[in-house]
Length: 294
Ligand SMILES: [Fe+2]
Image (cartoon, rainbow, N blue to C red; front, top):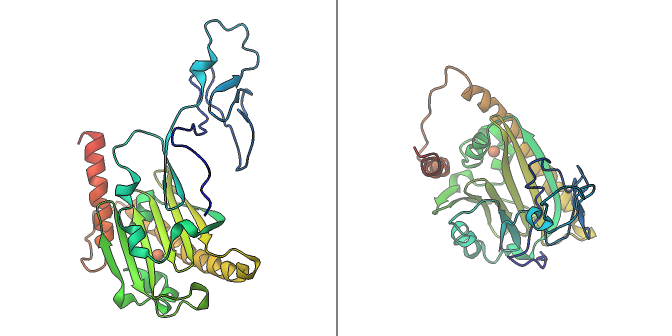
């Protein structure tokens, strides 16, 4: 994967204006390249370093200095070819969140993957319901029986690290496409990011809350080979993942209804199968305590 030439101190686009009279507006509606950014609301233009350049019909505004109204600076960092943006100050760096993952999946190297496509799913459940579901293989035989044909469920393991957890399984048969080396890795990186790694491919999932019971999940697919020759196999991989995702969406939406029932109180964890869910919920409790003064 090609890493764009961005320096850490570079400014990143955020449609934020500090004006008291104008609300923030959108700078872009789609991906792409441009030489200047123009707000689609009142036409303010910004240079790519984030500084405000043009402000239509503002000549008569006193004490207005464009230097005070540039875009907001945010922090970025890289890990294995992926770019991460942090909107608010935090004390954790990427290396502590991802510690040990690159070594564990070796010789599979993520920074060699090439971006293929992005698919978005909206799910009618709380984001934590979606993450809980991701973090256990307990439901595989009942929700995804077809996955049990390729994963050895008896050898399904869960490991936890400080800020991430791993579900891994030996594969029975992944077929020629994946050049089967016997392992698949499902990493969850706290609080809302997943790396689904098979030989030859990386699929990332970003889980974004849209409301109390609405969640957006963004899948990105990256492969070692995205040439014409590989397209048929890539399509088969994406179709298979989509089938599994539709099954997960359906069960998450049913579970959300159950959680909203007055009859629901609390559940218990399976020691054998739900160490990842317990790990996630423990980190979440710590975050709530730290940030909500509980
Ligand atoms: Fe699932």
